[in-house]
Length: 465
Image 1 (cartoon, helix red, strand yellow):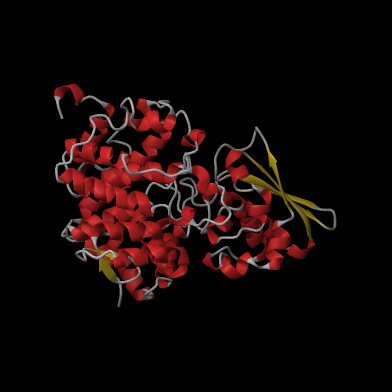
Image 2 (cartoon, one colour):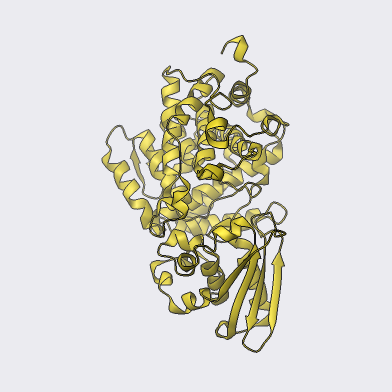
């Protein structure tokens, strides 16, 4: 890095990542990071047994050959380093159960954790303190990039979460490998040559790419840092350059101050939301509202005449096209459907992974109820994605209403460590090779004390009894 570039935006961010140390992290950041790691590992384990959409990715990773360096979570087998990130990346979002950053919204750890786990295991031993630093710094970068945008990536047809997440995955993997700032810039450049995701994945009623999308940025991040480590030079300004990330994806409309404000002092990982329900975060306020009305008024779902909701563009995306969202063809589309998830919340005792199966996609009582939903776009609707208003009209003429401004799991209404641990144990029990409750408890405890682990890669991937 020459003197002319040392104050460039890409260089400042890369320098921060390279020099970030565990002892510099606030205690709240350390605690939040361990919660994110626990949740992410649990969700990947569950996906290994619950999602058939991930199987082609796992099979390809197995068939790829090469040195068996890193584990595919839930399957108890090792494959080549980039392919482990690829397979685990497919697992990370397959159930749409991982953490989220509500203000944007984004899933900052969905490709990051698969990349970090693969690199940490392949380059063992990596101390747990190093993993915590890498995850905290990488997650923070994703959130800062998203907050800095003044033109949404959707404006030009992109799908933001995996594109933004790829930079965090690259930053975190680079930090695990202790790359210097110049090589982190190179890695960002190499990522920019690979990482993309079209918004078209939202519109097709048959694709499952939306479920497994994080496989691509996770693998790209690992390839980028490995190439940078081997001396492949990139661009001096991969983010802010004339044809860098911001100009290519956001029309050059961004605010550098949002990237740099309190950099190294405030970490946005402290503001993540953790999911109680395994579906799009934008559905959670309505699930909560439906459960509240059902529990309070004790009505029979068969007596519902109409369901009315209002919301903004995020909620609109979860309701349209109307026919597709009322009767989704794929499990991942059902998780991105307000008619389906609200109907599940009204019919089932709880919305769980078992609410989203091939059988429930054909459940006539659920589909009939979903068909009764009407959506109203309102300019004054909540801007906060996990918020919403629900009205239920009953056949006896009663109209029931409930609004939720911040859905459960928000930092202001968080899932506590006990709830998060219970979620982890349940998820681990659903793995392709199920983890016993006792083994899951021990793994959870190791994650909550990860700063003491001399070989974090082994600690996070060794769980089968």
